[in-house]
Length: 273
Image 1 (cartoon, rainbow, N blue to C red):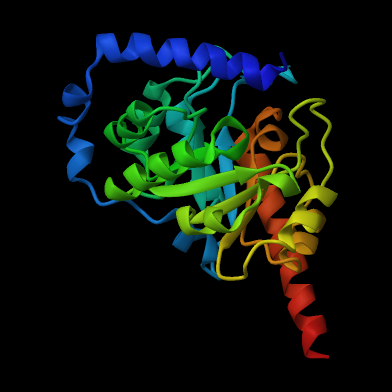
Image 2 (cartoon, rainbow, N blue to C red):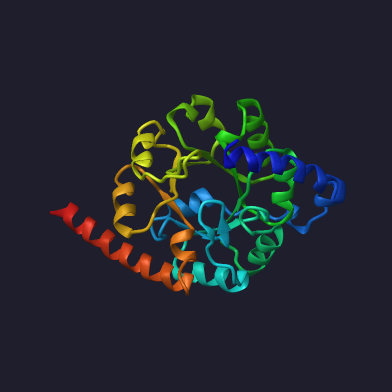
């Protein structure tokens, strides 16, 4: 059993326990069911934005503790102020040290799009995402069969949530996938070895229609990488560890985006000559 299988097995048990404690009918009483979601896809495509989804991340199975002392209030505000297009909040507690409360806190601080980063395998979690103020959910192809993915994506759209579908391998990309996705995310991390290869994004991008909002995930540590990936059709970039392992994550984000803007300007100037 690899780490993903372990997480999914744990998540199945966790969801059943949550259903007993907080039934769907109670979740549906949340004030956020009246809220119109902010479009993550639109935010990533804006020319005046960086395209960066900054992630609040305390730890991970592959890296251990990354940044234990997290102020969600400060990070959510300062990441957006630093120039991030959106926020990603990990809500898995057991493996990533996050919580639903983290997303609720972030939602109170910002009006910008928030992605709920979670291992979603059950319709309950989609309703839960809406109830805590998320604008978009993550669905990982490696965790779901086609029928379940289609059902979860359909429910998300019914609840006015956008769907980011994550792929890792060529074998996970099929035509129906594009009908369910508002955004396709290509994860550069091998789920079995946890090795990261940016070339994964370049290769798989060729299989994604240009009409789909496309993001790259994992292993992004330099503005130069983002400039290269933009030339391959990428609109957005999910960055967590690179910022969160720093003493001051929002400052690291701001410095990164400042350099990205300089490189963008140079690229545009060279295109004119």
